[in-house]
Every structure is written in C-alpha cells, then in structure tokens.
Image 1 (cartoon, rainbow over the protein chains, first blue to last red):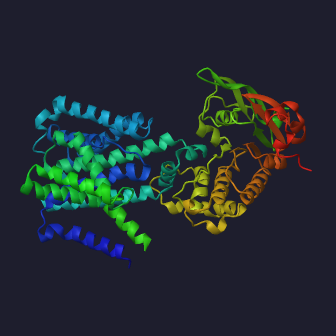
Image 2: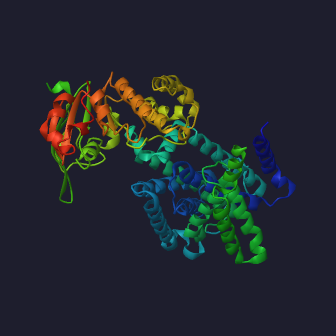
Image 3: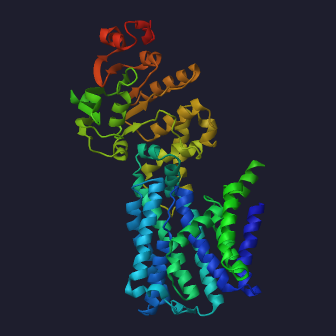
Length: 307
Length: 258
C-alpha cells in the first residue's frame, strides 16, 4: 500500500475513535464543520480558479436559517438543515450570477460587497436576534430516530456529513463537469472557442460551493447551539481563505489540514495567550506565504513527485 | 451561388473611438477552400479575425455563416455551429494531459458536461476517437504526457487536433506558423492541408511561403480595406499589392512558386 493510503486509513480510524478515547467531541465537530467549509471554498478557488471574499455569507445565512427554523418555528432537525442548505444555494445563485460577470480582483470585490450586504441584513432583521444572535438551538433528533443531544451521537452525524461532502467534492472534481472546470481554469478563451458557455459552468460551480458551505454553517449552528454575527462576518470569509491557502489550494486534503491547524490554534492558544492568537495565526500565514506557497499539503505532494 | 459560400461579410466596419480599423470589408469564403487573409502590419487582419470569432462586435455590417446571420451571436454559440478558431499563441490546457486536451473538445457532444455526479471514467468512450485525432497529427505517442511539457511545434499540433475535435465546418486559424522554425512550419502547413480535406479553412498568415503554397484564395487587406482578392499568382501581380508590400519590390512577397 502507498504511504498516503496508510496515512489516510490511520486518520479515518482516528476520526472514528476520537470521541471514544476522550477527545472533546464539540471541538472535533467544530473542526469538521470548518474543514467542510474550507473544502467547499476550495472547490471554487482551487479547482475553478475563482477567489471569493464572501463565503461567510453562505455559511452564515444557512446557520441563521437553520437556527431560526428550529427555535422560532419548531422545525425538525433534518428539514431545518435542508432549508438552511437551500437558503445558501439560493443566495449562492443570486450572488454568483452577479459576481461571475467579472474576473479576478473584481470578482472578489463583488462577492465581498454582497456578503457585507448579507451581514447587515443579519444585523438588522428582526428574526436574527441582532447583536445577540440566536441562542439555545435544540439539536432535536435525526428523522425522529437518533436523538442528537449527546455530543458523541452528533459527532458521528457530523463526521458522516463531512465524509459525504469530501467524497462529493472529489467526485465533482473528477467528473465530466470537473473536467470542463479545469479547462476553464487553465484557458478560459480556449474553452469558449470550443463552444462552452463558461458563465454557466462557473455559476454551477459557485452554487455547489455555496451549498456545501451552507451545510457546514447549518451543522455548526446545531453543534454549538447558537448562531452569532461572527458566522456571517467578513472575518469568517477571511479565515476560510487562510485555512485553504495554509493547507494548500487545489489539493483535496489541504483545506482539511488548514482548517484543523487554524481551529486547533484558536482553541488551545486563546486560553493561553488570549487576543494574541490572531497575531500568531497571522504570523503563521505570513510564514506560509513566504516559505511554502503551495500550502502544507501542496508542498508535501510537490516534494513527493520530485522524488 | 450563395450555397457555395460558407462565410460572407457584408460591409464589415469596426471603429475604435473614431479610428477605423476595418472600413467596410466584403469577404467571401468558398466552401472547401483554404482562404488566406494577408496584409502588412496594422492592415486590420487581426481585427477582422476577432470580428469573425465574435471576440469583437462590429460597428456596422453583417456576418453570414452558411446563410445564417451570426452577427449578434456569442463566441461559444458560434463555435457550437461549427465555426471554430485557433489561437496565435499555441493555446492548450497546459496541466491536462495531451489526451484530455482533445477529449475536452469531444466531450461537449456527449451532453454530460454538467454532470458533476458522474465519474470521469464515463468519458472513456471518447478515448478511442481522441487517440485517432492525435494519431492524425502525430501526437499519439505523447497521449499521456502533460501538455505543458510538449515542445512548441507539438503544442501547435495539439492545438490543431483539439480544434479539429470540436468538429469545425469552418476552421479559423490565427497565424498558425508564427514563431516557428522551418521544420515546424512545414509540419503545420501539412497539417492545415490535411485539415482542409474535409472542411474550409480561413487563415490569417504572415508567412508568404506558406500562403503561396497552400492557399486557394488570398484576400489582401490594407488599412482596413480589401485591396485584392483571388488566387496567389493573380494577387501577387496586382500593383496595389506589390506597392503595399515594401514599395515596388515584388521579391518581398517571398517569390511566386515555380
């Protein structure tokens, strides 16, 4: 067996065993949600070549939609998650349709501006709880069968969702559609000259990415039991970019590793150094940009292929 | 008679802020021919090319393709009708394999290009056809190589194979031999002749040797206007054409083939 396969097997076994050997499940779930978020973001940046500065809008909107439905409306867990994901998809279609008309920095700016709009709606709208956000979300049960109150049960649901998303992204990248996306990333005008309406492909990629980012947001809301403005904040969009670049864009595992690193640093260092954690993560990011441009996983892969 | 023409432009004009790059060009490309568009630098060749491929939209005039007015269509829509272009710089998808490059062009036909849930292996049915196209341009042994690693002349061949894979009825070539050594020029000229056996070719070209050798009809542009059109031997003797190319020195045209 190849060493990568072995490592992946060990990681998978560890993921299944983690809550049983005493690792704090809420921390792991948070990590998995952000890993899912980063993977969804990477589908756009790494495999389509579009840098969105507003992905928190999809993550946050889905979190708010799910949160509001389970608290104010008393919806069940699964329908509320699906509704949150649908909200993210619809928002992705709206923002995407506007943003993909431009390229590069202009694309990034449009996504950022529209995401700010979503933030202000969340701040002002009557149903989002303003500065307080939504508190006390019940986790309910999965289709009335599996109660999710226990962290361990919830953990396995989140893990299953994460693995599903990860597999789906691998499939999307290695599909006829993914093949066209690669062609567009490599040479847009050539793809047009072969008869591809590239805007439509970009829009589908954007909506897929927004949808999966939404799933991450909905799950995170249920895991922690609250939704706050920080979910939809610009800083959250920045964080997912950082995670993806740190781990390695255009690699499957990169965003997972990047999310793991950032969430772990935030979780454990904020107890020790308080507000300095932002500075430390910033320094790590600078080091990453200067020393290993391809990100951690990207550099490892490059090192291996050189041998 | 209209049936004989695959592409026609009527009074094509393109102005850039008052500067007239193309000033009313009537072009008639006959089906099955190799038609070359030549002219000194700044004559408006590239602008005409970009108008035909819909990269630019004309200020005035119409473009007819197989009898249909395509003036208002988008580039991808024109390509799907069989009017496929190549690029000046060899335009390949650098990090796809040689086989995948050609397959991208074939893939649209399958109608599964939006199917993000299907495995890549579903494209395997196209491999045979892709390999045939690669064999035609002598690239079959390189099928598994990543395109970026090919030498320049071979990239050009790959580009032509990809363009052919898109199923063109009219092939538009933008300076196909630009920046090439002798050997590559000969290979590409042979490729163009091969491609022209089943379809029409319209090419913008600088290399007079190539034009003299393979073009059936030549249209000469100068300052945005057509100054001559016809077979090489006729065009090369046209005093206006001789004048346009380096004063009155006919040798600059690269010599009439014996």
